[in-house]
Amino acid sequence: YGLELSDFKGIDDPDAGKKKWNLPENSQLAVTFSDLSETQEILHLLAGFEKVAVKKPSSYLLIIGNGPLYKEVEYEILQKALGSRALLLGAIPEDQALDLVGISDVYINLSSRTTGFETSLIEAMAQKKVIIGSEVSPISHIIEDGVDGFLLRPADRESLSSLLIEIFSGVIPT
Image (cartoon, rainbow, N blue to C red; front, side, top):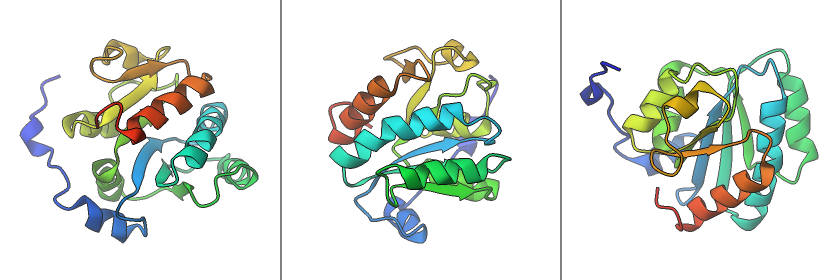
């Protein structure tokens, strides 16, 4: 895509980055971005992550973004067995958002409305994060399933749960 990847620098000290966000040093993080204008993609993600939160107590889901359905998503997080393990961070400055990508283990974008060329995706790929994308979005033209990342149906909560548990268990290296 004509990018100079040397401009993308990783996080020097991920544990310090986690501490800055009040996350345990040994935590495993999945990060996603949303404009919260449609809740289905986030609701599927939350339902899938619920199993992960139970089986992998050190896992966290970071949701970055703001939009008209923020309160509805916040309510869903409170209704699920997620406790403080799914964090709805709202709108944050781009440098902070990219720092969160840097300290995360997994980057998730299950939206079918993506362009596939978001800054956060490029940053996650440059930092060699595990990418989970939607098989029905333009990301599927960038990511080869099982090679560059993983492609799932956005509503396939079971596959998402299983995949995240495998990643956080070390079965799939990060």
